[in-house]
Length: 226
Image 1 (tube, helix red, strand yellow):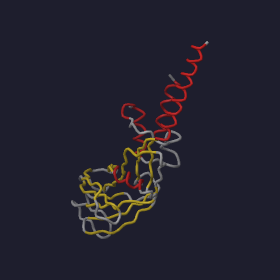
Image 2 (tube, helix red, strand yellow):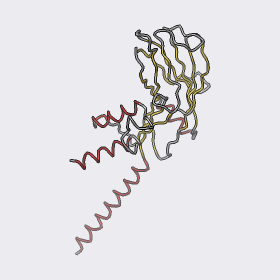
Image 3 (tube, one colour):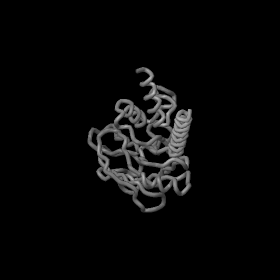
Image 4 (cartoon, one colour):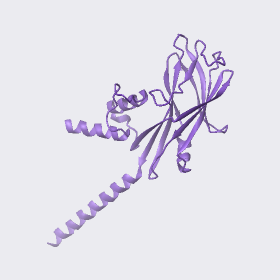
């Protein structure tokens, strides 16, 4: 039983592209959504995605593009490399929204993710909550095209409309408002989660199985001859 549990643990870690179990008290604190993802898969194997590998890429740079009334725009830059023999099956943009701590009111707003320097909307959603939280945005098609183009560095323009707030030009939040985290290299930094299939590994395993099958057939023939 112990060996089985250890094997399952190693399989979870491999899928999450981790070398060990994330430690909340370690010097390098993993984002909370990665902790939740690990705990989710560790506690219920039926929800494990079919993808062989799960990678996370933390935002490398954030450029505040300005405030226009209740809207503010930020550019998120990522450096992402995926081996050419892997096939991307799903991709998510994880953004952390910080509620105004002195307000007990529910905050509401609209978040839209665009291609860089274009008006091409990738995904948008309403965000409603009274406490800080992570939000997930499905950007699978965009990341698949991005990887096919051969580019390693790219990003998104994120527009947040705090429509129920009176956001001032001083970037101070009014009661009931919220901000998207613009931190880099900490537990609230924006991140890309990429799910992929290791086709190279599958081909190697298929060749190995074929070789073993051929060896078995040869042994059977030799056995019949003698």
